[in-house]
Image (cartoon, rainbow, N blue to C red; front, top):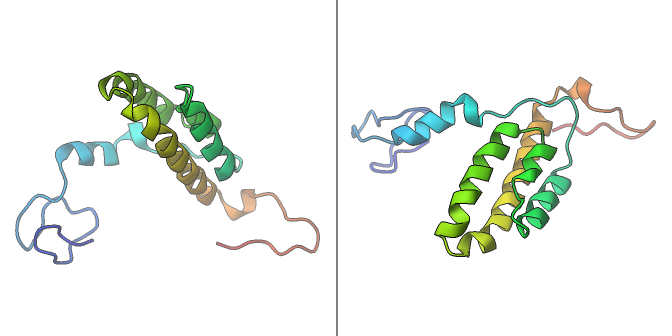
Length: 136
């Protein structure tokens, strides 16, 4: 990672640049990054990134975008985004209505990919006989 003020290389989790002394992260971003509230909960089976994105996109048009997190088994993210949605829709006078479907689709797609990557290779289903196993 590089310091956004002086451009020098710093450790990935550094909060203060050792070169210029400026704060790299706000305390709120550090709180959420290290919080149990935002950590992904490991799953026992793979989830389709396409389905997760589709659910997030389609249900957002009827104000139910956070339901996609239920498909992924991430109830913590469901509650966080539900509260944000309830607050953001009226405060943005409709702007959130247009943006949230794309935001939910992208985030839920990426989250499904991360969850699948967290699974052990042995936990993935075996490919059909003769088909090569995908390595990532």
